[in-house]
Image 1 (tube, rainbow, N blue to C red):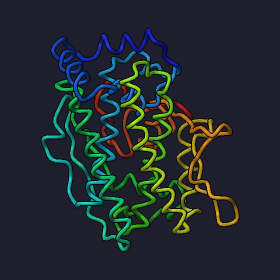
Image 2 (cartoon, rainbow, N blue to C red):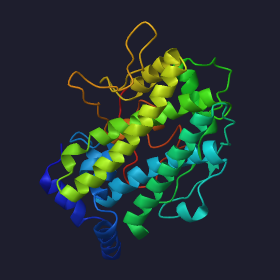
Image 3 (cartoon, rainbow, N blue to C red):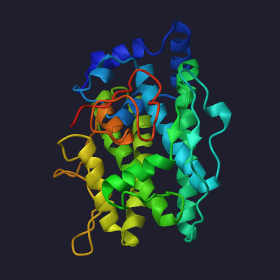
Length: 310
């Protein structure tokens, strides 16, 4: 894991120029303290990640922002039938549109409320990271919600080779689609714990980690209560096959076995993913590539290549 010297270097090289650096540090000193730790947590940094090791903290935060754009767009569409406002999508790099998405016709009032709450949280995360990065923030990249979920569902064996998967068709599809994102975010946060040295940074990072873990817990619990264990197990296996040999994924149990609503290792701790492994999942590709899946033109910023795992 990274030590104190690397964390200091991240802070010293926080943006592309001195003005951006001052804007970043000013934001961090007011409401964004802890954003270095929080942003790194989203990427799941480890010493084995060459991209992350050479990246400035601005680059790391922008990688996190790319992922937050994806989550926010997915939930904004499901809960409200709308995309992010244009003012929250501008920045450095090529701004892309969002393909697919619409409001879900929820049949369960409680699940609709869960979706609205998570959508509001993810919107707040985008605002938080953009505020911390200031003029160094990257633009929202092109996002594909339509064909990416179909590809993921086919790979998992949820549908046949000629079928399509619509994550907004009903609340069950929505929950299965949400499961793809939430566990990845939690395993990514876990990898950054050693990065957080400053107590204020640690408090903010812990707060963001807790929110993502709450989201994952909600989705996993509802899926279990609906009896969708088999579908979840297939998604988990497909997702785990993308990010290398390590077992970074777990289902939610089965009717004949104990519930597994909190996926942990033998010490009761969640697993970790590197930035490259996270990109393997969202690019839907086990090889080293710079685009694909949910990001058809790749993410914006220098941390953009997935790991080679196959």
